Amino acid sequence: MNARHLAIENGPRLALLWAGTVLGCTFIATPVKFQAPSLTLPVALEIGRVTFRAVGAVELLFALATLGLMGIGFRRVRFGAVLPALILAAQWLLVMPMLAPRTEAQIQGETVPGSALHLVFIALEAAKLGALLALGFRRAPIQSA
Image (tube, rainbow, N blue to C red; front, side, top):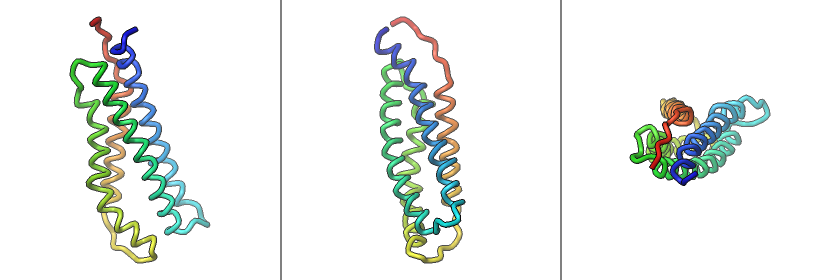
């Protein structure tokens, strides 16, 4: 089996692994953390900040590896393969910098006014998860080189 065939087989698998990371960290672990009665909001936010930085680094590696495999496996990289990485970039370059000061203020005990930024981040996470699942479950025909 050549590198192209291995990439075609493993690119979608990597996308599913990335999707599992997003699902586990964003949609399970993060909300559950805020349900712990003895965990104060500032501590939960500090834990969240550290967790999201670590997960962001892992997601960057997933994005680079997925794009690399898809680039090897297909004659042209399709938009569906690039979409999760674009969403990740938007989250970290646009949304997170706007959320950071709010989070820091809450950690310091300040009251901050309501904002839709978290909903934007969650919507982007849901879109990224959907794109990763679509990428992971797609079946590309293996063509001889």
